[in-house]
Length: 417
Image (cartoon, rainbow, N blue to C red):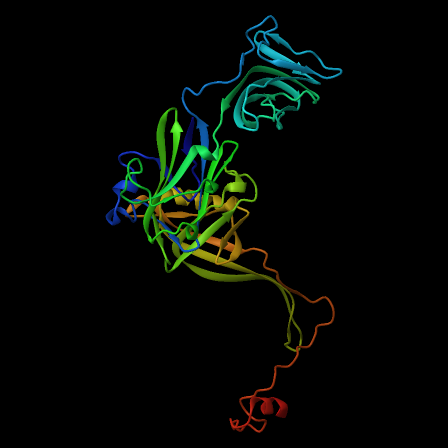
C-alpha cells in the first residue's frame, strides 16, 4: 500500500534491503574509511530518522467519477452542497468550475481515517478548503486529509473562492500500524531471522507524507553489540524492508561527542515536529574567545575597560566521514541550533569546508566553528569608572610575613587580617 524513500541530508542512512546490503554483508573488516559507515550509539542516546511515504504502484483510486466525465452534469457520484448565495458548480471540457458557498463531497470513506487526495487545480482565486487543508495556489496538490465523522471527503462550501479543477482523486493512506520496526544483529537476514527487538508502534509517527522513527537505546533492553534497524511494510502485495547502516551500541564510546540538531521549523524537506537528528562522532574541540572592546589608557598609565562583549567559539575537528554525513553537517548552516556537551551553538560563518582523504575521495574530514548560543558575557560602564574591591587577605602568611602556625585555625587567620 506504500513505498518508503530515504531522505538525504540527515545523519542516519537507510537503503532498500537487497542481497548486497551492508547490514548483512559487512563485518569489522569493511568498516572504516572508504567502507561502510558504522554509526555509534551509547547508553542514553536517541535514534531519529525520517522517510518520504509514497503510493504503491497500482494503488486503487477510491473516488467515483474523479475526472468529472459521467452523468448529465458530469457530477455523478458527487454530492453538491450549496449555501445561500452559492454559484452552482458546472463542468465544461471535463473541468469543474466551483466557487463561493458551493462544495462537493463523497461519503464512502472510513470515518476519521487518513487518505491521500490528489487534486489538479488549473486555476484558483482565494482559498479552497478540503477537510481542513487549505489550497490557495494552482497546480497539482498531494495532501493528506482525514475523513470526517460521516466518512466524507470534499470541498468545504463555506469559503469565498473560485477554482477550476481537472480531477479529484483519493487513495488509502498509511498509518503507523502499516509499518513494523525491528532490530537485528548485523549479518542477519531481516526476511528470515528472528529480531533481537520488535519496536512498539509508538516509535513511529505518520504526518502528511512523512514517516518518522524515534527511540532511545535505553528503552530497548538489548545487550551491547552491532545492530541494524529494519522497517518493513506492504508495497503492493510484496513486503519491502528499509534497513539502516550498522550501529555499534556500547556502554560508552570514549572521545566521541553526540551532536543534536534543532531545525525549529519544517526545513530541508523534513517535518520538524517528529525529526530529532543526532549523530555521535569522534573528534576534538579547540576553544577560541573573541570580543568587541572599548579600552582607554589615561595619562597616568591606567587602563580602563569601559565595554566588552565576549564570545566563545568551539572548533570541532571531525574524523573522516562519508558524504551523506558531510551533507548533514553542511546543512547545520541553516539549523536553529546545534547542541553538544549540553550546550547550544550556532555555526559561525557562511562556509563549512570538507577536506577529502587520500584513502577514499568521497570521505573527508571537516572543521566546524560553533558559536555558543545565548551566552551573555557583556560588561558596560557608562558612569564614573568604579574602583575594584581589594582582594581578600592572604591567609597563607601572617601580616609580618611569617608562616602560619597551622595549629591556629583558618578562622583565626581571617579574623586576624
